[in-house]
Amino acid sequence: MDVLRTPDARFEGLPDWPYAPCYHEVTDADGTRLRMHYVDEGPRDAAPVLLMHGEPSWAYLYRHIIAGLVAKGHRVLAPDLIGFGRSDKPASRNDYTYERHVDWMSQWLKGLDLNGLTLFCQDWGGLIGLRLVAAFPERFAGVVAGNTFLPVGGGMTDGFKAWLDFSQRVPELPVGFIVNGGSGRNLTDAEVAAYDAPFPDESYKEGARQFPALVPVTPEHASVAENKAAWEVLERFDKPFVTAFSDGDAVTRGMDVPLQERIPGAKGQPHVTLSGGHFLQEDSPQGIVDVIDALIRRRG
Figure 1: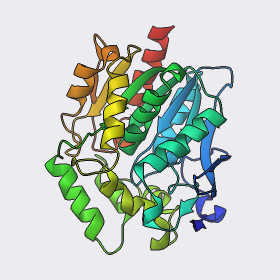
Figure 2: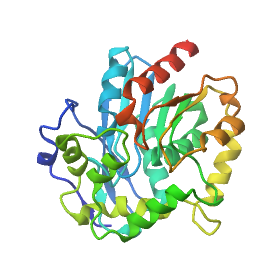
Figure 3: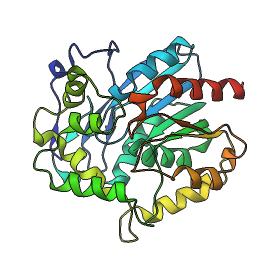
């Protein structure tokens, strides 16, 4: 496996990003070692909050949420998926599979020996994060899901189909433009540039290009069986599970309903609808902080 690493200089001087990089090495089944970046802020003796980003963003998406949660006394971890942010980037699209991503994140989770986790997940952060909850339910104390789902080949929304078609056909994938367009507010030029920072050129974007095609929206997709098995665990998950979807996301609209109906821990929870687009972290960071903090405090 050939691997690219974004130069550190690309991440200097990003707005609202004072966080020191942390790294953990994971090993692919073929023996390739990959460096995964993550942020780890707040008191180490506090129960950890895990913030998982999706496509095509990185941990920068959580910059205001990290600060808000740390101010409330929480430990916050925000990893970059392999292929994104400051994490290493396999150079071939064929190196990116759903199951590899789950394995890489599982190694990171076990390597840091994290327990008592409260997960917030959005987009692919949920497709991977909910698989982690199903694989290690004993490590998670609660979940907040926003604009995400765990598909098992049952089709796609019109919004997702439009995104899939665009992502596979556009000659150059305009990452910062995509995040800006998927947010309810207009990002500044510096913020757009921060989302472009991990990708010096198109060769670094193979993971971002491949991710939409990996979503198991048809029965023929890989990982349908694995996601069905994960649902069997989630349908027994009785710890607090809150949905915090936005009111302006065509890609995942309505997908909070099956999460609420099928996961026992979602019963009786104060589910909320936040203001924003697909990248609700850009639109309602304080709302997300409040939902996560309230879940932890209710839990005691």
